[in-house]
Length: 304
Image (cartoon, rainbow, N blue to C red; front, side):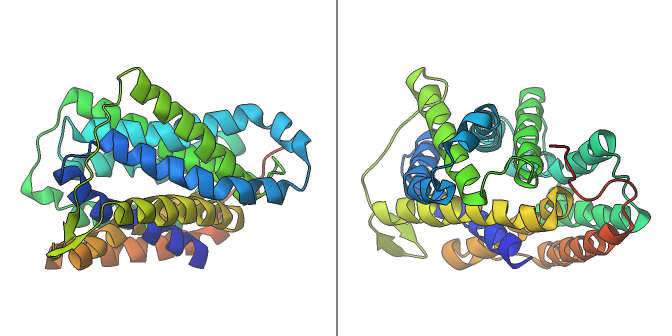
């Protein structure tokens, strides 16, 4: 649980760090590429060391690593930023964060792990909490392209949790993170080269709460904290918690994002958002208790 919460808090920091960069002229594509590319450079040496010369693991799982990088890293990022270019951030996040429900359905259909009533109640509390945290009750316009892009981000997010919880690959968590980040960075760079993801940068300092900082500082934090630390701890957590529980704990990323925006951007959360955060935490507790009543195979048991 500790690892999962560290991962969620790290991922949640990305929005508050990136907002001033986007306001100063950076495009979302350039921020994401720097973030994932820097994380790949940091994690790759540790991933190689964790393999301890077992290169056969890489060859055997090459397809899985490529899929993980393309879907769980690159597609999740690219589709989300494409979604918010067509619709408001709140609804886009709500659609993307239906990923835990997709994980539950996948484990039920693929591995026979039928969720119990406590898990379903916890999932319902999480869904209600998301609606409140994202402040969707005030109304928001939806667009068909935006919804489709957000669903693509949801698929990438669900893939992240399902692959993370699969121990049958034999890959150490940090090796999977390294491979996925390298593959994801390559896909994002390709999208930039062919013009599907606009790339614009600006070297001017950026402001956080009236304090001007050099542009390299938030970029380094984005790569080190919100990508390298976030992916490694997220994979390690999913190996211990299983895909289902890890995906629901990750919903606390939304709560963390609101709190980081408060601390760095002075965007104070309202009482409704705080209530939503409490409901998400209560829902995660319900899903945790419901893990004891899952009917079917052991959590994330995958045939070798």
